[in-house]
Image (cartoon, rainbow, N blue to C red):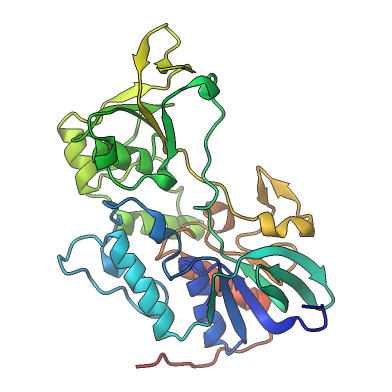
Length: 356
């Protein structure tokens, strides 16, 4: 496809997960022609790749994208990942969001009056590019002494699905956040688990869930609070609470290095290990923006909330660096709305009702 035959659109949303859908909602509300490019085969974004037992931190009513509240699950508990995937698929249909599946964006370049966007299926020209690619495709594993000599298995939480395959194994779970606590709790009844963290884990009070976290984040965004750091880091969802109270979540300081068949601590203590599960987070998936030569700090583009220096380039849903609570279902909407309004300030709001 030549540059002249590139498909034209006013706005391209890169990524069709929760952040991309929220962004498309506001583009649709303003009547702005747009297309969402997503490299996944079906709806659901990162929720397609979580472990089987994962549940949200909040009830459905506090886990909703703009415009349509998430229906509660049949058991009235906190929704699981499958429920979220179903909600995102129905949301996409409800608002007739134009998602092109299996189309991976490979490069975004500056062009006259906008951007040239190259994909696995061709070339686009867009006045604005709103990035919502998330982080799940870039799992982070730290470089650790002796890791290359370790003969056991190493897996990131991005590839962890269920505890059954680790039954009877000696498993080390690394990471002191929510993923580390939840994976360790999931494995505890099935494997011999050692939970290693750099610092002692800090559990939030048992009555604090995503509703309170979002409230505090909202106050902080308004300059009326200091965030949730003083409360703790780990939400005590029921499986984590049960494992903690049963004594199955005993934290061990981080080991010093790998050996061929296990790990060793600084004091010389050793332990044989079959599998290490790294719950060490992710990095933004932004390789497609390399041609733009964006300035970065601490590995992420310099932004003011979701806004880059170019008002027609935005970042939605990657975490606090592009908007407090922007990586959550309930929090991403406010940043998607701001990104769309900044990119297209000349377009007034219009009313577009969903089908059905």
